[in-house]
Image 1 (cartoon, one colour):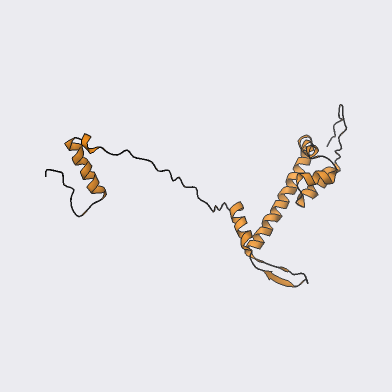
Image 2 (cartoon, rainbow, N blue to C red; image 1 turned 135 degrees about the vertical axis):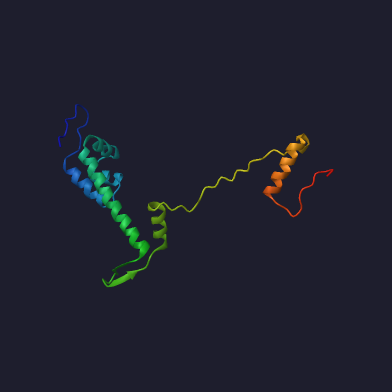
Length: 159
């Protein structure tokens, strides 16, 4: 890694040791503003270092991935229950935590507790039977009987 000389303005605070420190901090679950504070630089500097020094960016990505894996494992254990040690150091069973199971299901398994439904009511214009020809009216009655059969056939006036 080669640190470029700054052509003007304030010199960079970046030193190669920051790569390893950032990796360790990200592994512990620290976020960008916390990493910046501990490295004694601004948040903007962290983003600048990530842009200028790919190894710095990769270190933070690797650390975040490791921390994320730990989080998922912990959620999985809490959702399913696990054997652990209590405050006295004795082995004990920790029962499943419902909230952890719900969170894990929603965020990692794609479970949705709501389903969007289109409940739009479309208005169908009323049929003016006075404008139908005799043939069209007979066809309409035939289709109506087929769609909703009744015990009595529909009779036309005058039949």
